[in-house]
Image (cartoon, rainbow, N blue to C red; front, side, top):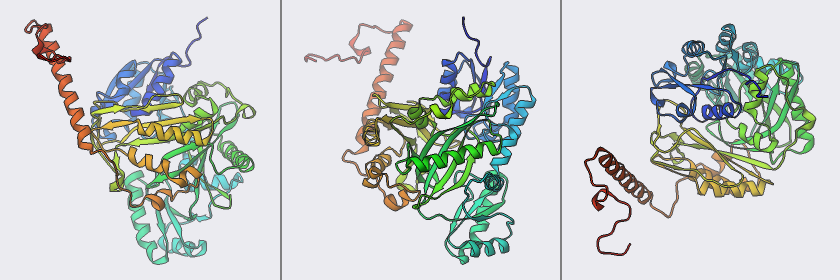
Length: 507
């Protein structure tokens, strides 16, 4: 007997590689999908893969992917009964989640109340303290300059200024001395207002050279809560992750158990449902502190999938449909080691500034234990309107040393031409002795690669010229074929074919 799909049709309120990832999971489960797209994404990969696609607005995200009202109308018109927000954009918008539910559709993620409880960094800190989860010493009772300055002296410098509604490094400033605090507060407020529409800030003690380790969690509507172990996310640039791995090379069994227990306690404290992460800072003495909760699927979820064997997107869909969690804590374990590198169109030699332009060629590495989650392919444009991520490159090995070697191989065989990418930089990071040893902190990149420059023995122009010639030949062949089909050309003539013909010379 054919099993009825969990949902009749799902609309994906996102773009790029996460939209592709969700579409493919739905295809495997027999669930039709609807993609939405902006002007800039009319030829996007997610548009071609979905069963249906609807233009949602102009290129800026504020006119398209952030227009929850438009997306909800399209969902209702096309008979969708669920919306998957992916990550970014509307994924942590509590009002949108509530609007979806009020319209009679299923929001594939936590409810608005849980988002509000954990979306505010100050509210989340208070909830974690009540649940007995360790938090970084800080101050959130007031955000006036005088009170914050007094609190900073009590906490002790250096301190970290953070946006209450923030994430991704926005509105964050490290302050080393009292004299620097007023300017840091002013600039943090401005950035927080621009990024989140909320200029509230608070203070935390700045943990020197910490590790950033997060735990994947899941809750269901039946009161079950689990964690699916940790991901080491310490390799970052501008407070944003670029390499993640599981298991962490730093954790032992005892620390892993204690952090996992704290993560599940955090889930239960707010009655959390669906996928999320509890993020911790861990100091050199193995003390761990709650950092924040992300109320959504994470970019780096594939490394957890590879070491646990659990498809997190499919689990999201089942939990959203009301099913109990299909796995229990005691049955979960980590098998082998997985590493993910985020492939960006950016220039690491120029402060990681984003790059835009056409991807003339994208050749992905293929091999056992190599996975590529891509949202950009040959011929696609990298737009200034969105995050410049091209793909995620993930490898699995039986142990960390094998995974590192496999990642080095995969990065050497990943070719993207037409835009500058961070692939050469990632190769150098993975090859660094400290990375190989697992000596990772959030200051790894500024400590070891502050003055990084591209070094190569092959002039890049040669590769670009070769690609240009390849494109010209391909265009010529397409043109000749078009002429033949129109009846205007002689398909037997050597002048209309560029397939190896030589005049008077053996090929």
